[in-house]
Length: 357
Image (cartoon, rainbow, N blue to C red; front, side):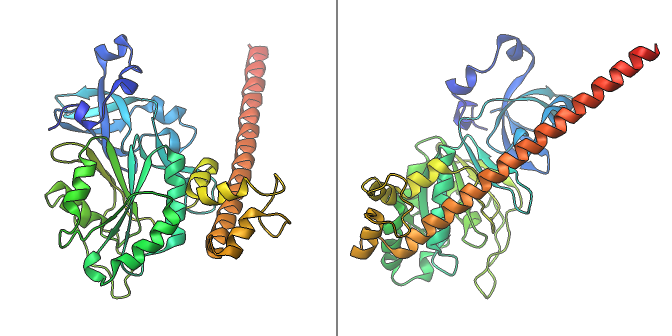
């Protein structure tokens, strides 16, 4: 079992713990989570864990509950081989997306991640527009993105695909691998073992579980063959941390078929840095790049320096981000009204009881 610092513990987290807390609670990292069930690592062993009632009671939303990668302070019940989580330490980074469905809520996929491997593959899953979406959310999270194009064994001309990627990734490193055959695994492992926490994100069927097994050097994740139509199956059902030999931490996540934006202004600016750079030369400061005179972005499209579908993707993601922000404002406003009504009701009940006594 690795030491605590090998799991990513450093001064950022250590400074958050008081001497009184050190005397009664143990710093631990969430290494597995599914439906409010947790497994913690203290650097010496792992413990099944549950939340203290106070954390659940104070949580305003699911984003206030622990996720894989979080550092927590827990009381360890050695006789029962169990732990209770009493506090979540402040997160350094958080990869978030909009929760699936009609509700407006943040879903934190992973916390305290230093880099994100955006995994796609040389088959039907390869989708430039989806990669742009992943890049925007990764930059917004505070982590550094890397792209892995897996299943090179299925492709005769991988350079054709990587050329397309280079045109939209703005210098993000690209690794071509075959987890099944072992191509590119040693170079990728060397990059990840430099330290820190790396999360794997991607759709079902891109080979994330096989990639985890190849990087860890053991069959730690179950794998399933993809369907005959190239669509993936969920072989990973819960988020989980693994330690890499000789160093570094790897976080595997279930495949995501839906990836909604969540407050990604800065992330979009990073992911579309080429468009932002051209936009700085537009005649009008509020140019929408939709046909205004003197638009440098439109000129770049006309010259062939910028693909029209990339600009369309930029506009589409901007509109989605603005819609999500407006929904967030509505949600916050509704929650504020609900809490105000609760306080008013509680005050009335208090005065009613006082007058009756």
